[in-house]
Image (tube, rainbow, N blue to C red; front, side, top):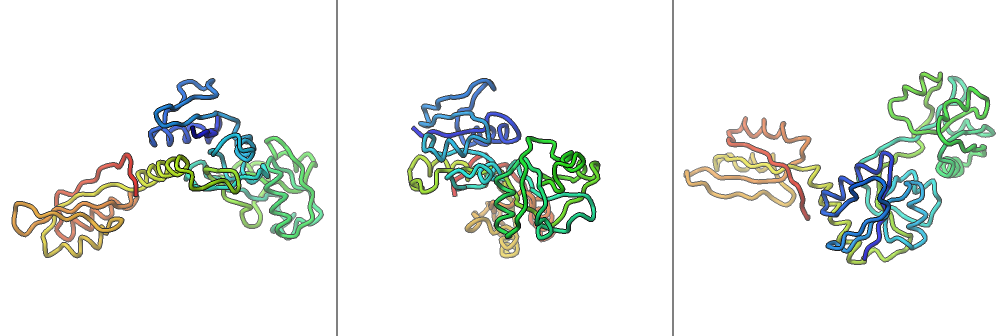
Length: 282
C-alpha cells in the first residue's frame, strides 16, 4: 500500500485535498482525522504538519508527500521534488529600510531575520555572502524596527505589509515556491503505484488547463481552423451529413478559449462550444 503525506492545515491543505479528490482518491471528512485508508486505490494518507512532511518522507517511513518547495528546501531533508502542482505559489524576497542595501551583494556582515532559515542561509552561501541569519516564527517585519536585524527575508505577495512597515523589497527573488510532490532522494522512481499516483495528478493538471472544443466548419476552411486548434497531437475531424461540412474536436488551452472561438467564428466556423475536462491521461 502506498503511504502518502498530506498537509493537515494551512494554505496547502485545502487545494491538495481538492486535487486528490479530483484524481479519484478518498479524502478525510473531518479535520481531526490524521490518517485514512483508501483500500480501493491501495493508498494510505497521513495528515501531517506541512513543515514535517519532508522529514517523514526522507526517513523512508512514507513513500511520497505533498508539501511546499520552500518547506522542502528549508528542511534540509534528504528528499527531492518530483512534480510541481501549480498551487500555493509564493515568492521569497529580501526587504529592508530604504538606502540600507540594494541587493544580496550588499548584505555582507548584516543580520537577516526570517522564518525560513534554511532557505536564506543556502541562498547567502550560494552567493558567497557572509551574513548572520536569525530565525523568527512569523511577523518578521518588526525585526528591523526592534533592532533584531537589518534585513528580513519573507514571502512577498503584494508588498503592502512591507510598505506599511516602511520597508522596500531589494534584489532578485530568493526563490519561487509552489506545492510539489516529493520523495526520498534516490528512491525508486519507477515504482508502479508511485507512477500511477503521478499520472493521476498530471491528468488533473491537464484537465484544469485545457477545455474540449467542438465546432463545425466548411471543408475549404478546415486548414485554417486546424491551425487555430491543433490539439495535443491533432484534432478529430468527422464528415457531417451536409456535404462540404465537417465536425472538429480538439483540446485547447482554457485561458485562450474565448479568443480561439472568436477567430473560428471569423473564418466561418459555427456551432462552436467548449466543455470542461474532468480527467484525462496523456
